[in-house]
Length: 182
Image (cartoon, rainbow, N blue to C red; front, top):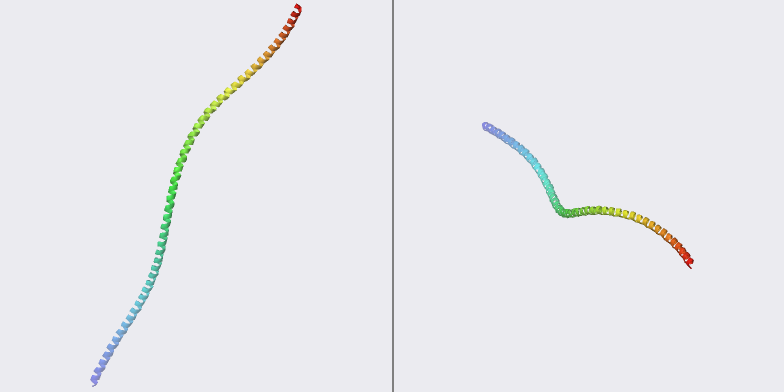
């Protein structure tokens, strides 16, 4: 019995030892599992945090994309407006160039007229100078003729006076002759 008791004691010790080892293993596995659980929980927390960050970045990117879309539409609208303005400016530029060409043509025509008029003026100036010279000669001739006329008038007056005196003398002589005859 003692032997059986000893064997049973040995078995019990062996079982206890095995149970302790099993418990130790289970405890180690439990601790390892708890560490894995904690590690996994940390990883999950990090993953959730990253997921939240990605979600936040996604929302921010989505908002940025929406804003970019709005800006793109606004820029396209502005581009259309600017293209319209550019077409208007091109049209005005074309009109201005046509007007400029017309003005240049008018300027050339006016320049030609000015040159023609200057030529006419030079001719008229020569004609005027010639006429002034003729007028001066005519005035000099007129003064000479006036002087001659005055001289002739003076001569005529002298001759007229002489004639009158001669007539008076003749009349006196005629009267004297007539009186002597009768």
